[in-house]
Each structure stands twice: as structure tokens, then as C-alpha cells.
Amino acid sequence: MSNYEIPEVWEWEPDEKSETGNQPTAGSRFEQKLPVGDQPLQVYSLGTPNGVKVAIMLEELKEAGVENAGYDLYKINIMNGDQFGSDFVNINPNSKIPAMMDHSEDQPIRVFESVSILLYLAEKFETFMPTALAERTELMNWLFWQTGAAPFLGGGFGHFYNYAPTAQEYPINRYTMEAKRQLDLLDKHLADNAYMNGNEYGIADMAIWPWYGRLVQGELYGEADKFLKADEYTNLKAWADKILERPAVKRALEVEYKEL
Image (cartoon, rainbow, N blue to C red; front, top):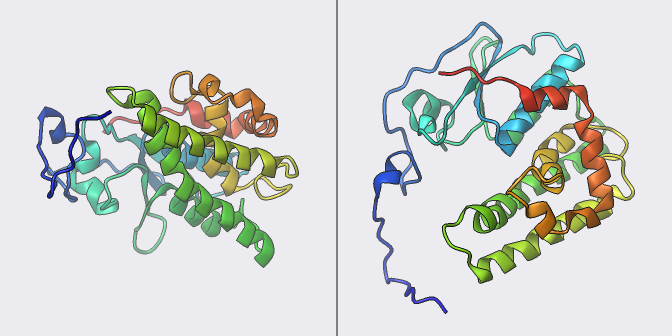
């Protein structure tokens, strides 16, 4: 039983971690000049699941021989608060990685939110996304599912299982239930589909794999795969292992981020 009583009005109590961590306000906290390299695409990111999504797409474009998709990849150290600098906030006012600037157009275009970046690149280079209405819609279904589902996995299950300062039965049970429901959903879908969008690999796979594929492979949240009995999701595991064998995916996991 918790002794916490909900106050009538919530008040923020800043501490030493608040300088670089979460605050109840948006916007930049300091002046910043981000580097700009020679490549058309300037990407500011980190090797989190959302960051890996974009790294995979960029490496897949390279693997496919797509021209004008060269990129410079810079490290945004979220523990140091780089995401709250003025230049980064100008690209992504939400202060989350990844963010990208496309300098190949007449006027540079900013793109933020990982799935928005995937869609932008897929449409710009006309690849990894079907054009037929039914197939395109099915891909969009799974993309938007991922954007809505992942916060329950990362901010919910991952946080309370692996990062919270104390173990708490109620939130762990609540979010474990939802995590396993999501894994079961994917497992059932992949029983009849080679990839998320049927027989064609695409950006839905790139969006979902860094979260759910890496989870069942034991690469997220300590021993969460054992806790969740991930081996039971055989179709999901097979799909995850198949994605990992792609050369572009392997490179994306090992890509070096340039320091600011």
C-alpha cells in the first residue's frame, strides 16, 4: 500500500537532475550551434530504438544504391541535455531524437519524429513503401500502430521494469500485461506474413524491429526477454532474427555517431 496522496494541484520540485532531464516546459535551454556536414541529409540522433529506425533506413537506402541519400550522423547525448540546445530545438521543438535536416532541396526541410523521417525518406526516394492503395494503407496501419504502442512498451513496461528506482507491483503488472499483448499481436500477424506488410520488407519493419525485435532478442531492458517469456513468440522471433541478418541492419547497429 502506497502512502502517496495525490495533491489538489501538482507542483514541480526541481532537483539537480532537472538541468539536463525532464521539465514541465518546452523550448531551448541554451544557445547551441550544431555541425553541418557535406552530405545532403544531416541527422542528429542516438542509438536508441527510435534512433536505430532511421539509421536502418539510411543504410538500407545505401544498400539499395539510392543516389543523393548520403548522410552525416551526429550524436545527441540526451544524458547531457544536447536535445535542449537552440539549434536542435529549431529542428525538433519536442526535443526528442532523432531529427533530420534535408539540405538537398531548394530550401532545407526539417523532419522530426522517427516515423515521420521514415515516411519522408520513403516518399522522397520512392522505395520501401508500396504505391498501391491497399498495400500502402496496410503499411500505414502498422506504422501508426507502432507510434501508439511503443510508449506503453518503453515508457511503461521498460521504465517500471528496468529503470524505476523502486520495483512497484501494480505498474509492472499493468505494463507487462500490455507488453505481452502487443508481442502476441505481432506473433499472430507474422504467422501468416513474412514481413509486417506481407511479403515485402519495408519501413514498417524498420519501425517495429528496433523495439519489438530487439526485445525478444534480449537486447532491451536487461533480462526482459526472460521475464516476458519471449521464446514463446516463435513467429516474432523468426522475423526478428531474419531482419538482423540484413547487411544494412547490421551496419546500422554499428554505425558511428560523430561528436558535436
